[in-house]
Amino acid sequence: MNRKYFALASLLVIVALVLAACGPTPEPLATEPPAQSEMANTLVVAENEHPFTFDPMVGWSEIVRISVIAYDSLVQYKVGTSEIIPWLAKEWEISDDGLTYTFKLREGVKFHDGTDLTASDVKFTIDRIQDINEGIAAQLATVDSVEAVDDYTVVIKLTRLTGPFMEYMTQLFILSEDGVKANATDDDPWARNYLIEHDLGSGPYMLTASVLEQQSVFEKFDDYWQGWEGKHVDKIIWLYVKESATQRLMLESGEIDIAQDPSWDDLAALEANPDTQLLATPCTDGMNAWLRTIHEPLDDARVRKALTMAFDCEAHVEAALGGHGKCAVGPYGSTFPWYNDELEPTPFDLEGAKALLAEAGYPDGGFTLKMYYQCVHDEEVRFVEMWGANLAQLGITLDAECTDYMGVVDMIVDETSDYDVTIDNRFPNAIDPEAVLEVVYHSKNLGIDDHQGGWYTNPEVDALFDQGAAETDPAEREKIYKQIQEIVNDDNPAIWAPEREYIIAARNWVKGYKFTGIHYQALWVYDIWLEGKP
Image (spheres, one colour):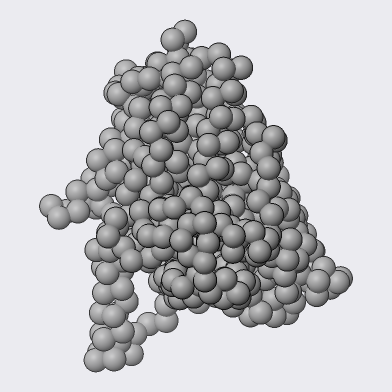
């Protein structure tokens, strides 16, 4: 997160507290829970990370969770599948050379501010993302120009072929141009401060109240373009509850309907509870431990391999994931197309690790690794505990310090940061290998968001990425990306953590939940309904 916006949000909270202490007793917040009579059709969700903004341009998991509630994109995945279907764009054409995309927009779409969606809003949204240069800006780097031909036709031209471009479009959440301009200031021309506590989307639910780090409330937008036939909830209350144990108690008591972050320790009890259900789906994200390759001794591939051999993946799956996962082999998930299934897994082997360290000049270890991680995530805590204990047997000290996600990102983008290891969850923007691999392992992405945690560079890999981006033959692309996987796996810039399932816990009255892996942790609330909730 940009530090100045986090600071602003924090300042707003402090000012509010000071005013409350010095002035008359304030009126109750509009975020008080509704009366019990309203709760039967109100979905209450608890998660452990709060969104620090409601600006959908920021492509982080806690923002994506709410983006699909309040915003719409040009195209979208059919829920529960990887099929791309029309959304705000009712149809589109792609030129023979693959460089020009023409989108025809639906008419009659309303934003929450009451304005009509037009092609100008689409162009404005892309211009805004490119100027701010955060979120999915890296995925839109090949956009050369955007033209609003008429009110309902947008033409996007690319500088080069971009295989996953349509998949990127599923995350281009369109904002109201008029709404942004009405709330812009000289110091904030893109209304980023306004979007800390408001939304400017056209999605099924609109943000009506928010208390930073406590809760957000979304209510049904009556003018939503898809209409309200069928079963839907009227309101969503999004609570921010850090502890899994607290989420579990709230779920079991019926205080919440969905717990998005059950710890692996709680899964057995929740599964055994006749009033709750576990909804588990294999997912596309991965918790990699990045080894900062520009620091000694991590600039030696032998040391990085030794550190990987000190990670007991099988034990991690059982202890940290409750058995809900499998060990990864290589930098690319086995569920993705063109996965290289010929790669050899790195074994858990402390004796082999000692031999490699000795070969690299560290026979007794003798060094300390500075590590940052998020202690709000149980899996990361378990990783630190278990891996740290194994490193100690090699004579290596793991100096691990807890931070939050914004802190991790700030350190990753800073080349002078002191960390040697950090954990970052990768949420792919598409299932194409260009989207999954290039953004993480091409050196052009160094210092951009949290993409390159290992600060890894390899000119051969860069050249192969460039070759794959220009290649139109799928068979040749497959060869290129499999070769990239082999090289990166040998270079070992990270410890590939297990491929896991994404699991939420819900009361039995929650119906219609489906998981779409690319929008990780997002709830497609429009398709969810409550049946039999008291």
